[in-house]
Each structure stands twice: as C-alpha cells, then as structure tokens.
Length: 158
Image 1 (cartoon, rainbow, N blue to C red):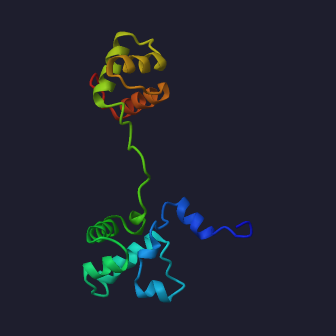
Image 2 (cartoon, helix red, strand yellow):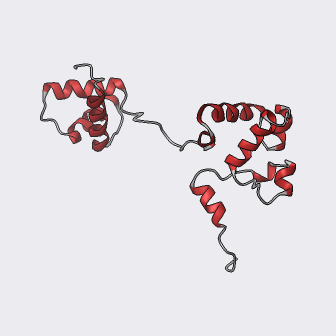
Image 3 (spheres, rainbow, N blue to C red):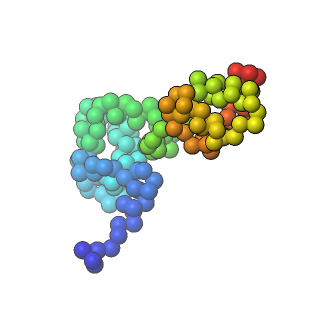
C-alpha cells in the first residue's frame, strides 16, 4: 500500500461533499462506457438521472434504479435542480442549523436579565442559561446570538 498514489479527484469530491458514497450502484450505460462520466461524482450522477427522465423520456423508476437512487431521491433532485440549479445538488453541510440551544425563550430570558443588570457579562449570562434551562452554551455563542437578535430587531423589548 505504500506505493499507492492518492486519488486527488476522490479527495476533492470528498472535500466538497460531492463524493458518491455508493458509486457501485450506478449501472447506467453512459457511466459504464465513458471516461467522461464518473459514478463517484454525486452531482454529475444526480444531474444525469434527472436529465434521463426530462430529456430522454426514461421513466422515473428506471432512471432512479440505473443511478442507484430511490424514486423519492429522483424527485428531490429534480426539485432541487429546478429551484436552485446545479449547485442545489450539492448536499448541505451536516450538523445543526443555527443556534439550536439559544431558542427565542432563552434569548428572551437573557434580554430580561440584561435589562435588569446591563453590566452582566456573557460568561454570567451563559451560567444563567445553564441554571435556568439546564443547557450549557459558550459565552461567545451568547454574545453572537444576542448581537444577531439586536441586528435583526427581533428583540421583545425593542
């Protein structure tokens, strides 16, 4: 294994979250017979699946099976392509979206505390969240969430 060269394309696809986790399930003839098509490229695979149905008249069931996806995956990819173009076929970053611990209720509480004592620091506000809600948050997260709320004007007090 020491003499094996790294697969730079696979590395780049993985870095961009577009590496197909199951390239062996792509059995479409074009992918089997052409060097241009790469079953490891998830965006290319999804695009071609949608194109087969919309331009070539293939059935959704047949196209989905040929490209290693479910029918629902076809419909999701087709809608993403229509709504957001090719870039919409790139999978979203994994993980939480937004401040899931710092809910509106928590932020309301923090603003009330800050209203009573404007000298409270973010460390103290984070401790207050832990005491009141049983949720640990980083003081910097408190600062950012309160700043976002202030910038958008979604504060209860304003």
